[in-house]
Image (tube, rainbow, N blue to C red):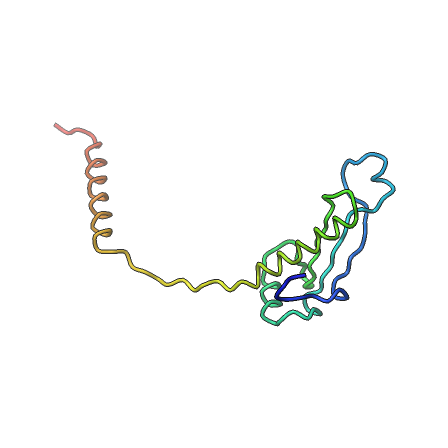
Amino acid sequence: MTDRYPIPPHEIELSAVRAQGAGGQNVNKVSSAIHLRFDIHASSLPDVLKKRLLALHDRRVTREGVVVIKSQEYRTQEQNRAAALARLDELIDSVSVTRKARVPTRPTRASNLRRLDTKTRRADVKAGRGRVVE
């Protein structure tokens, strides 16, 4: 699990399901895909991370506050389990980073003058395109 926020295994529900798509005869017999379910409300994560996870506009987080990750990219159940857990770690790590507050800045006087100068030049060019009156 994550280095900063270890998640106890009893908070993660893993279930094996059959993978979708092509795969020959083996795909009909073997449940190699993994469904990972992680209840945010019942987890031991800090409240700040819970709020950030619930506020995410991510299709993996349901309305009930459960993270659902399906992993079926590998042929073995173990590899899919590891991939699903890695994706959960990635999701938690993405909300654990606090963004630096943006410091509002003003454009310099020279850049404002340059902008206004190009605007007047452009306006003169466009005004010269009008109908010629004799």
